[in-house]
Length: 162
Image (cartoon, rainbow, N blue to C red; front, side):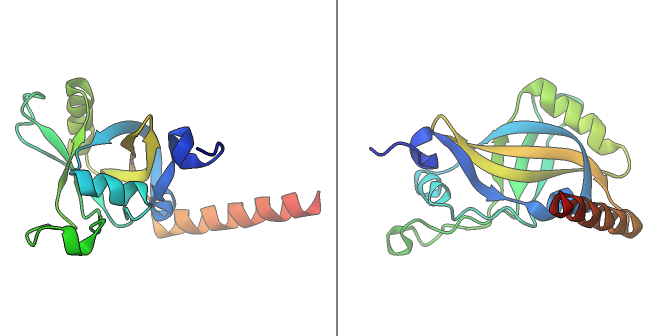
């Protein structure tokens, strides 16, 4: 084994949703496990997981946190070995997220308020398990996005000048 690679170290970003940080004003982040099939884990660890454009839904009874479950929708995981995968495999199926009852209850309350969204920010490996970092936030308006662009370009110019 060679040391220093992200795979050997057991942690490293395997997918990132950079657009989400631009489109949303993220107030709070959560870490969730994701329920995958064996070949999906291999494909995701190979860096073929795509979370851009995906979102998180909470399904089930909102009054009872034990009955509610969180799902990652529109995440794309192609088969690890296409010729060796069953014919009924869906690349874009809804995948269950592993959150505590308290987190699901908190998220359910926040998502019922107008304007709040829960989006995946990045996927990473921690101790051999694939985790998803979720962000709870408001959608930015077009004018806010322009201000962010101006601020970033100004900071970039300051760094170049030093």
